[in-house]
Every structure is written in C-alpha cells, then in structure tokens.
Image 1 (tube, rainbow, N blue to C red):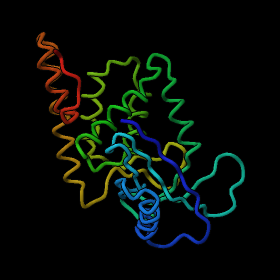
Image 2 (image 1 turned 90 degrees about the vertical axis):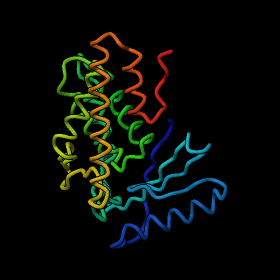
Image 3 (image 1 turned 45 degrees about the vertical axis):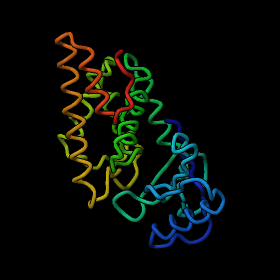
Image 4 (image 1 turned 180 degrees about the vertical axis):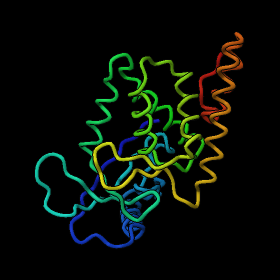
Amino acid sequence: MSGADYFVWLDGKRPESSISTLKSVQKTLQSLYPTVHVRISRPAVLIEFAGGTERVGIIPAFSPGTVVGEDPRFRVPGVAEEWMSACPVAHSEWLERCNAVPGVRGGAKSLARLARAWRHFRDVPVSSFYLEMRAAEYMAGRSAVVLPYDVRNFFATLLWDGLAPMEDPTGGARAIEATAPHVRDEAILKLANAAGWAESALKHMRMGEPDQAFQQWNHIFGGRFPSFY
C-alpha cells in the first residue's frame, strides 16, 4: 500500500468539536474528487485513489498561537478525544533516531510498515500514528532485527498492555492514544488474533514447515501476504 499524510494548517479559532471540522474537510475534498472515495478516519480525512491502493490523508491542524522556529506544535483531531497535541517535525526526528539505532538500523520503519499493513488489510480500528510510535519505541530497545520474532513480540507487547496510551516521546502534554473507547474491544480482539497467528507462524518455522508459516502470516495480513509457492 502507498500513502502519505499531510497537515493542513487552518486559520481561525479552533472549534470545540473536531468532528465538525473533519466533516467540513471531507465535504470539500469530496467535491474536488467526486469519483473517489473520501472518508473520515481520525485524525485524518482519507482520499482513496485507485480503489484504495493509493491513499492520501489530510489532517486538519490548528496552531495555539504564533509558531516560532522549526518545531511547531499543533492541535489535531484526537483518536480517543476531541483534540490532541501533535508536532510533526519532532515526531519525525524521534522516529529517525530510533530507526538509526546501531544493530537495528531500518528496523523501526520496517516494523511500522508491517503493523500499518496489518491495520489496513484487517481494518483494525487502531491509530496508524500510535502503531508507528510504538514500533519505533519497541525497536529502539532491541539489539538485532529478526522480523518474524519482532512481529510476534510486538503484537504480544501491545496485547499485554491492552493498547495502553503511550507517553509522547517528544514531550507533548498529552499521551498518544491507540483507539477510541467504543471500538477498543474490536481492536483488542483483532490484535489477539494477530498475536496468535504470529506465534503459530514461528512454531511452524521451528518445525521446518515454512509453507504453514506463510499461511499464518497470510492470515495476519488478510490474505495479502506473498504465497510460499
């Protein structure tokens, strides 16, 4: 899957309701692209080109005041709350540092891409930003990258702590939420399934049954994982 997220810095006073802002952005974008599916997926409005294989996310953002320097902080629609704090520059720099840790160089982004693919193909109601931040946090504490094990351990970690909010590594005042309360049970159930399939895939690998392991990974990614044969 291919995609990109863009912040749109809106002028004026930030409304109390983030959903009204998202609906307004959705309506505007739908008028611009009448033949394309445009939908709300907090914190963004998604434009799904080419049947969803090319995705662009538009995130409405408000600044609390005059932005000075190259590290502005914004308020954007939250996952489990109306508005959350976001600092794209600081978050990007933190992710790059995690991704460059000796021994696991490139591992943070690799794990994040797999986690986001699972989210997309299994329609899991979990924030992709949360998955990206948690993947970077996990990989920064490792000494080597072995993705079949890392995917299993990553899912197990998320399941063990129940998709708990993550403290913002850039010093933001608010925690990074995983999912909205009304869909948390669905997210946990889908996470438990993924963790079970990842564990089963490793067992088949150890038993010398790679074809069976591929089947389990295929379950994780909703039938979109490459075939063993």
